[in-house]
Length: 269
Image (cartoon, rainbow, N blue to C red):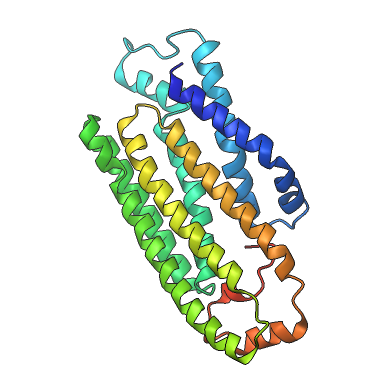
């Protein structure tokens, strides 16, 4: 097993150990929702794949898939058994992108047409990525193009999040002038910082995904970043649930002026 796989496994397990208390406190007792299911999938799928990578490399007979066999059988063997196969990578990316789409949907006010738009954009991005993967050679320059559509998709989501954050800041300034103890700006700032930070992480991980034969390290960084984003959001949202009824009514009055995510966030977001 090569060093990146060892490093990715160590990183993902260490992250789990130091954040499992927050996971138990913030997610285990919450009601069932899409974001909760995706959180656990994003949390435990990389761990399962890293454990399987150790078993695959160290304990199964080598080689597991015989390259001397005809193309279909050898290819299917690697597609199903390899922890770094395109199937496993695609599932991980869909889980992470699903979380980001739901998060952006909440930021934009839970508008159904935007949810449908970003879902279609996600599947088009994945289709383009898989198309480049299957219909081109796998030399290093081409592997960089494999992830180009995903990068464009994330950039569109990033710009959308920034746009709604700027709108939210302007609306909050108006509300602050009316009510001086209006205190939702920390949540808005955190969402904007998380969006910027995640996009920077993606920019750093794309070269790793493109130039490494193993995708474990890049996907581990992205998965950990999303896990931290959700834990921080839940942790920050808990005090906001204690807002008085008058503040909630005031937010409802301004719901046309501000995005819906500035209303106190419940356990579904």
